[in-house]
Image (cartoon, rainbow, N blue to C red; front, side, top):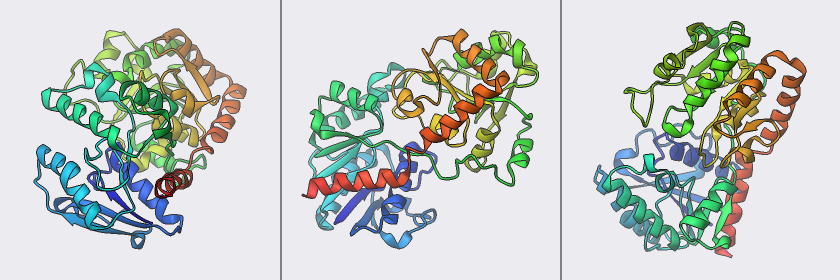
Length: 381
């Protein structure tokens, strides 16, 4: 089977679509199936195109010349990619993000991770972004099959794009293998580099409005007097460059809520390779997001054996299952109590840590690859 994959985000490893594309190709290549993978990539994105995949011989690259602009991106998605699929005699085409061709050249699979630009007002952008969202909403109806990351996203896609149930299939994502419970030899050094204490509550996962940092900080304003001196809150990640309603600066929120500055620490940027050490050192991980297509940070925490205190909305219950404490995203008191209990009740934390590893074991990139290959085979059958 010859599968042609849209590689627009191939060399964008800091984006969710880029990580998904890399992991998927890596996992498909490792299956050793009768599968030929060709990535169609704009010429100016060819740099280091083979640099991060263990099985580089299992796929080939097909560069196409494309104008380096937003209009060029649409030209690539709607004209150059389907043209390449015809030229390369594809059995199946796969667009691993929300942008299938309006006129597919062959049976096309599209992965829609979430409908954030469509459903959340703050994420709709300006007129050009809204026009693009309208375009890809229409083109999604022409894909032979839509893959998505959770049942919550599947419900949104069926309800808001109007796709038939049978053309939307859930394939859960997975954490990278580096997220594991066994401490690495450099864990202590990594945590020392970020100035972390022996015990702490961790938040890691972005600072835009839907991440609900106000609840994180308000919960810790309540929990801090009980556990703050021995188990402070660590807010990890690159802080917003500007303090805006879309991305409020958590340092300002902490000051406005009157949190004792001894009880909260901000690490700034954390390298991806350092994240497992931060998860493994945490007593608990807090993630009260209001909307997630999947919710990779909670799964990364679970894979490291760290219990999650999070929200009970969108896809998060599917990811966390019974391995955490899930509450309404504005239940500040409930989250504060959960953080206190996890920091003070060793038996409770040990039980949730055990459940975390059991839950995380349900998700793997090998499973993602097997189920994605089955989707390709169903189309070609």
